[in-house]
Image (cartoon, rainbow, N blue to C red; front, side, top):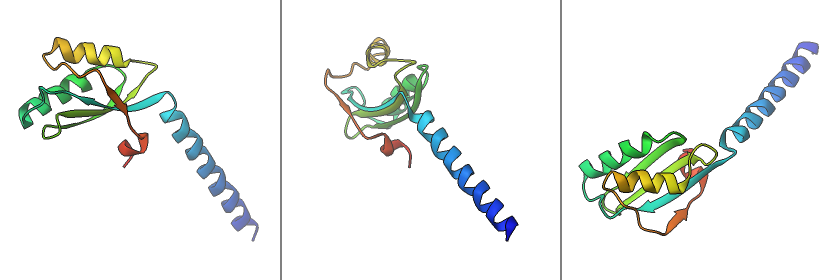
Length: 109
């Protein structure tokens, strides 16, 4: 019986630590959708995705050539929307002005 109680306490403590670590991992992170008219094919979507992934602080990227969008999950303590848009523009993928912030949970599945 004593072992079961000890196991239960250790298990619950482990769950708590995982939850705290998870919260710290996404603290300071944002998810955004950019409209990038130059993303018109699988090739340009892949190229834009590679450019975005090369930016320090960008964690995950998804591009959609049919919708001409790039969705990204990034740490806003390491990069900014301005830097992301500037990098895209310099590479020939200017993003439209309006940025839509989306739920972070979109990237956690």
